[in-house]
Amino acid sequence: MADQAGTFEGSRSRATGSGAWIDGLIGIAIFSASLVATRLALTGLDALFLSAARAALGGIAGAAALLALRQKRPRGRDIGALAIVAAGVVFGFPLLTALALRTVGAAHGTVFLGLLPLSTALFGALRSGERPSAAFWVLSVLGALITVGFAARGLDGAPGAGDAFMLAAILVCGLGYAEGGILARRLGGWQVIAWATVLSLPLSVPLALVLSPADPGAVPLPAWAGLAYVALFSMLIGFVFWYRALARGGIAAIGQLQLLQPFLGLGVAALVLGERIEPAMVGAAIAVAACVALARRLA
Image (cartoon, rainbow, N blue to C red; front, side, top):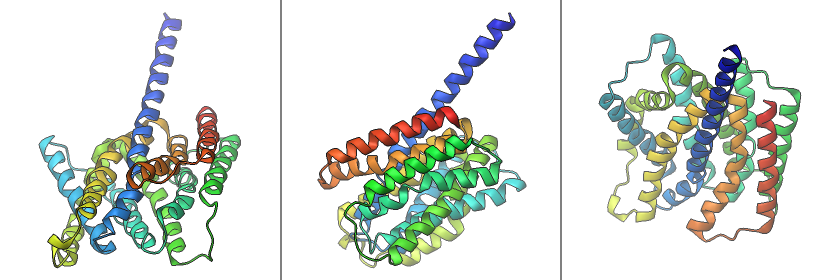
């Protein structure tokens, strides 16, 4: 009986782990289109309005879901953590990337996305006490170097304000991911981002109204489509899967899936913007996937 119980527990643990990685992949696939959608939105919308509007729309959708499903309010001890999540992923990352993409291209931004798994793992170790093995950190750095090295090919020019904005975005996003992953263990995955966006409504709604375009009809349709995507998918739906994955599979381990984000993002850019997929991209993606798989085993 003991052996059967152990076998059952082991099977359930593996199923839970696989589910976490599937959730993580879905979340990353959704996030991979964020930079392209942001670039589309910036063709007709101001960066400040875009950041406020996506937070406001995400907050309204989150509030509707919380009310419809009659979710309990977070406890007082959770408010501080929700504020960190809101500062990192509701306001910080969207605003900083939007400011960066005014002066640098989406391809240039992928250089910094390759650093996001390291940022997430580091904040996960600091905030949750996770202690991955040394081999895990070696693979994490290797995967980041492969990603950054591929994305940086052909880029030239001295670092500028756009680079500083992207670096700051990576740092605040890593903190927001780690804090949200910890909080999701108590509140649930989608509830974390829903409450974080709701907490932001007193700031996001007034800002969106004040910064709204003087002539909305003059804004091209692709810009509105980009806003709709980042407000609903990047701001809310993607986090339903992502925070659940971080809570179930571990912040450092699941965070390595972000190494695939630049390659998936380039695929989205090829479909939406007609950019060409190079053979080197396929080879680099395979190498990164190998690092992710090994990191999963060693985490």
